[in-house]
Image 1 (cartoon, helix red, strand yellow):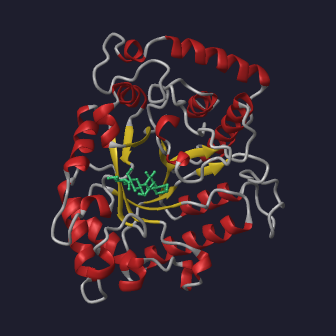
Image 2: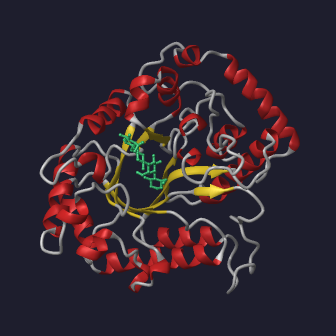
Length: 380
Ligand code: G3I
């Protein structure tokens, strides 16, 4: 569903109009109570599907224009780092909740849903983890962590990424499991984490979240198969799981394919393999969330109109494919403005130009990707 040249030019013109208004004016239209969607915002066109982004407490505290944009556009948020194990756990016996509490209060006071991210991951573990956590105490550490954190926000979390990125096929473990620090000390950590999370917060949708399952290529196909087997196995063991998070970190350019021609993949395919995977997840009775979407432009030429068009086209085609599945219950981008994207730190462009990967550019002006997302949310 790529943009026609006429659509692209129309939307570029609309960009100028939308961004002509100072953000504060847009955000203070009559009746703009917390949670009242600003006309033309992502959440105003997406009444039934929560739409939003990850946010950072340190930015919300210091950047008023960013904060106004988040309030204007998002109906669901997730913490970029503040609810991860490392930031929450300065020592084995203490918790630091200030930043996570700030985000929980911000979401609640602005009538926004809040995702929790994440209880278990192989990254952003505290420095004490490697020496303190052993096979003898690992289950107690994990259960205590989840009980404390999930218990603190009980009833206020839309969905928890209970386990993040547990599949790494190249590690050659059974089931394609990642040989992560948690796997090393507690091989049954996935089931333990989900069972503990259900007891600690029965209200939250328990989600398994992963990346690298979006593209129409063999590596992604292998990872999709492993994720499907993982969640099927959990269901067979009566482990509580409600949803799969598809992170949706995409890369634009000719080397990356996200919508196959039937039969293009080995073994054929009924159209995009991603759509088939999502249908398989749905058939297990699970919900789906697009949890961290952005489109990396590092393989594209420096020319901004060329980059913006390719990025917007990929937003349009990817969301056309994924939002067609009725099991999708949330769409979040990983950040809302290029001004703070992680992609300028991990996976940056070789020419060091700032990435243009999100719905709003570094000047907080809507990009063609914004209009692609806005159109996709309206089924256009
Ligand atoms: O807060 C410290 C600061 O005190 C210190 O001075 C600074 C320099 O060392 O580091 C700061 O912490 C950084 C943190 O982001 C907050 O900015 C960490 O070093 C840095 O590693 C961390 O990166 C985050 C990364 O996850 C690891 O947690 C990225 O911002 C975040 O975008 C990225 O998000 C992940 C998702 O959680 C999972 N899916 C992939 C996605 C991208 O990697």
